[in-house]
Image (cartoon, rainbow, N blue to C red; front, side, top):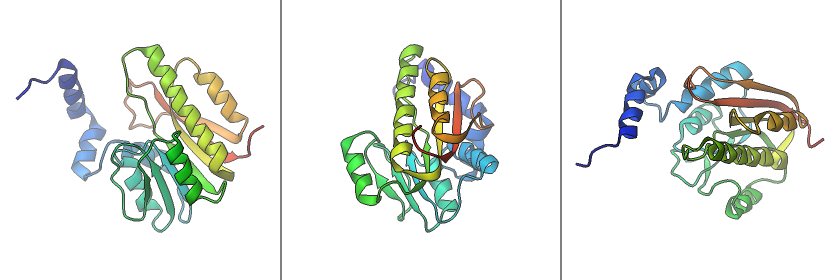
Length: 208
């Protein structure tokens, strides 16, 4: 058996200490991310039956399962090139948003801007270079905002994972021009040492 790297040992140790990781394992959840969306939904009442929802960066499916439980019988479309644990009624696009194949598939599923909610938990593969990682995370945030502009109906909502750093404030400022309200929140289930926060934008009013 090959030896684990020091970083792997640190990750495993952190997982064992993390209360939400332990809780996810105990409750049979796919990942600790389940609790982040649960807490966001509890605060903002994001999900309602009958909604049409697009989830970006869905793998491994922690958010997907939560959404399915809340929106039984509604339209849920998820995008990710990695495997997503999803129910039979969920539409899985096994291509990252931003690639032509994903765009074409969405065009075949949606008749223009008719989504009620766009959710993005997309995050880059971290390189360890903070400037590079921040630039990649802001690019993913741009993709989520692009999806909202293209597919949200008036009055729709957007939730995006962000990492605080260069470009963060300007990006949030731009988002405020297209939504009635934008709030930043760090769910309790987010690790305290992480720079991640979530932007919750309500009542899309289009580009200004």
